[in-house]
Length: 569
Image (tube, rainbow, N blue to C red):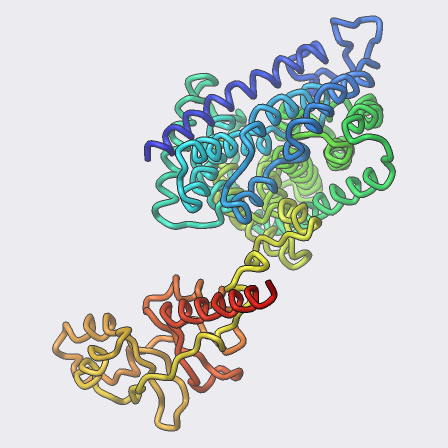
């Protein structure tokens, strides 16, 4: 608890410093607090250049952060969250301590110089690096180290967006990918601490100030559902275009990596010359789209422009997140959809801004496939609860479409391109090389499914694991009975004659070919200490597996490896 509070405080302070750096570099390189809403205005520091200063701003920023990233922390390149996910899944939560400082400077320079990326990826990486560094100093175990990394990620999101709940679920759903009560409690503590610090620095108002939106007709739910389906496609398209442009940049570039952001900055500057709304994060532009300031064609142009600008920023070696761009793209898509619906169905569609809000969450869900985070963060960013039902519906549909179209997300795609799949166990571990066949035990004496509970109770009491299989008269598998379930049922005297088949349940089905690491996960989540092994048709019981039998198999496998190594030596 003490460590999670410290990490939360550090992440909150890091968010304050990071946002100050972005503001400072934006003012220095553009002369405006946020150039995205300034149109084609000139930089007041360089009036002779007029609006053409945007050609130089990304180049100057790249000349500084390119060598900085290349020399001190290559992990700071890109959008940050995949690196944190990889550290948690494959490196025991270990992140080099210099990543926090390098990421803060590089991302602030990139965004301040016109990079069309977000600040959530950097702040997640900054907070996670702080958590990992603290965990290394006090030498915590790997499982605690992972939780501290998640605490840092949650604290960064909570402080920079004034969204403590969103910070928690972002860390749990995307970074830690684990919802145990202990880790959840620690992440909540860190998020609350960081949020208090963030609110002291930035105030307690919602991140986006919007007029209230309401669902005026039930028929609007059909339109919101349609928007969710389209947003899922757009979210996947954003991810695909992002990596296609990055591949193109990799194929074209032949110079040193430290110079790539500066040279590529010329291309980014040319895009900014045409669409200055792409400069930096672009929250003022997002707000204007939700309040109806843009026409339909401009909304579609800004949507396409953001996809290209963000992809180009990442492709040339920029440093920044993709969460804010996905919200931006969703706002443009939703507002354009809302305007179209209002034109075609003026009495039914309702205000276009409501569709913009829902589009924000749905596109993020379609690209990141994090529906819980999408719902929570839209509620906290806007403080708008009136559209929570259509928002949830659209986000679930967008997530489903994304899953149908691709097996990866905008975050996991980066890791899979490196040959890393965090959804499968680490190659080379003993459990990954074995199957349940190596750990099967003989089947204990089963219970007939018509055995009364009063007679089944003594047999369960004698069983080594408090669990016995239940079979039908023809030998077909019916499930397992546990001592706990039978005892709870027998607490009511009226159930003594109840057949044990009535209280049997079907746990996770294992077969001899099931990987042993999957069996371990099933045992960890089961109510019993042992699980049945079924034939390939999953109809007849052929064996039994327990934690003890798994440990025996692993120990035997290690002994065999040791003898082989000694013989080869």
